[in-house]
Image (cartoon, rainbow, N blue to C red; front, side, top):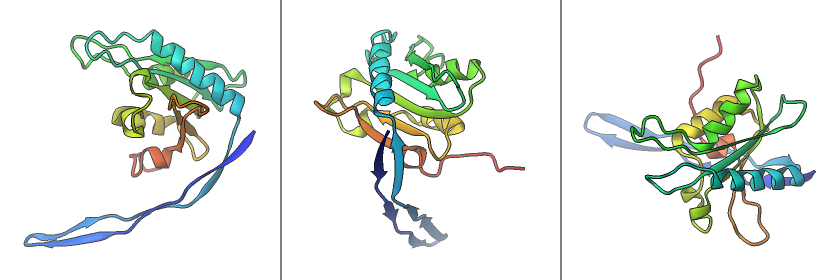
Length: 179
C-alpha cells in the first residue's frame, strides 16, 4: 500500500446582483486528503480497463472505453470489467463504467473500492477528455463512499493514471436525503 495526498481544492463564493435578484455561485472547499492505494491492485485494474476497451462496441463514435472495478464488500476482490456498447437509438447505449458497476451490483456488491477507466483514443488528452461522463459520475457516486478512488488512465510512460475521489470527480453530486 502506498499513501498519496489528494490536494485541497478551494473556490470562493461569488454573488452577482441582477434586476430580478442576486445570483450566487457557491464556494467549495475540499481539504487535502491522504489516501491508501494498493499499487498492484491499481495496476491490475488499469490493465483490465485497457483490455475491456478492446472489446468495446463503438461503431458510431469509434470512442472505445473500458472500465474495471473492485468492490469493497466483495471478499474475493474480483475484478468486474465493462466496455461501452453503443446502440442505434443512442438511448440504449451503455458506458463502460456503468457496465462494470452493474456487473458488480448484480452480484450484490454495493461499495466501490477502486475504479479504473481507460479511453485509448484520448490517453494523451487532458483529464476532461478521458474521465467519466456526467451520467457515469452520478452512478459512481451511488456506489462510492469517502474512501472510493477513481483512476483515469493517462497512457503516459511511468504513470498508471490520475487519481480522484468522488468529491473531486463530482462536486455537488446528488444524493437522496437520509430519512
